[in-house]
Length: 118
Image (tube, rainbow, N blue to C red; front, side, top):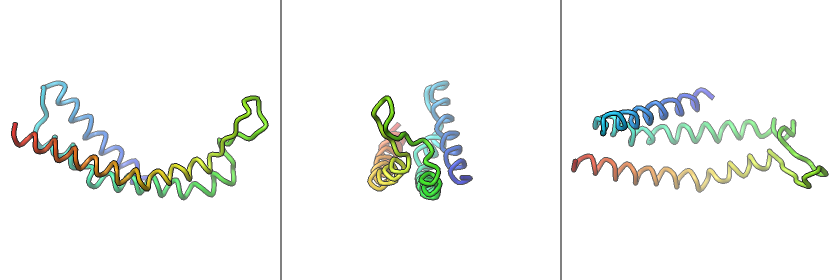
């Protein structure tokens, strides 16, 4: 849990410092720009592995407790199983994580190239 909170916190501090500075002054210092578009290189893998690990660890407790599950019959004629939803989330991480990481690499390249010409 600590690695997740630390990753998210550092990421958000950098992100909001960047956008706040840009909003107040019209631009951000190049060091903050670099940090904004480079910190994900470490923070994404740390955050993603923490999220996946925590979900995986929680699976046995989710299944045993049936917490947040909706069973039929009920007035909505609807069923939901949080255990299987959590597994689905883990499966989405497989293609989703590399896709997001690659997207951020492209954003980084674009933003840092733009800052060199400015």
